[in-house]
Image (spheres, rainbow, N blue to C red):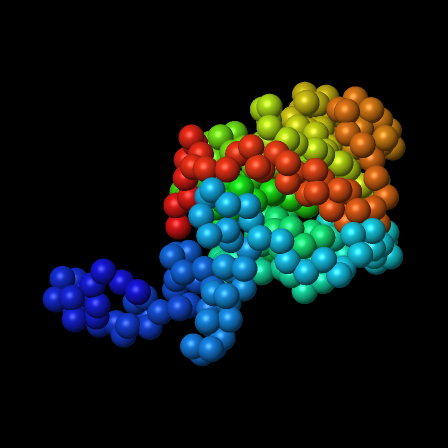
Length: 324
């Protein structure tokens, strides 16, 4: 995929390059994000198209089609109870959560090789289509980089256009910081995601599984008058800033003036960690804490409730429509 092939590039730039290195699947699925998914051959590609279209209504005036309902909506996956490591720097397989929460075998991942710090796609909850966003702690700690923000924006717009409820499973440490993010324009990419979220109307439910911090974490919430629910696992921690970064920022002078600044910083962090509690935070922020094994049941109940709301939203939306 390219606007000008190797001969044009050679004539314009004097550069010798073959078509795969110029615009092959590896370029566009991993770097540019122009292409979402790759298939081994034509039959496999057709199967992916069929799976994607199975979530879509024929048009914006119709309800998203319900699929198989044989998977028990009250199924409890025992793996979820011990999945989140106590060491918050240790990664875990977030796909276990997807398996435990969504209908069995229903998840269709979109752009799996692009913006890999986030996993996005479509799935089903008790047969109903849902959009899915979650962080992937195995890649950049699950932080939001430009590519992850772009593919999240596209999913939000897709689901809003076709009235598909959104479920967010959160382990968000915030935006990816540093010179590379600044050079790529992380603020612009984040702002576009904010714009898409605040203008969306589809039902939205969020679960804080491990953490939600900073502006990137706040993007997983959907403000406004439209149907929205949020819950937190007992393993969850959330706020405006991590204890580590917040301690350094708020107590900079105290730390700098100490005889041993590093020891003082660790002492302060340990103090705040001891009094940190998801129960206290939930009480202050109005969240319901749930057993992780209840997540699927809560989601299925929400999606069932959402069907009545979706019926009132059918038709073209007034906000930004889906852009590929």
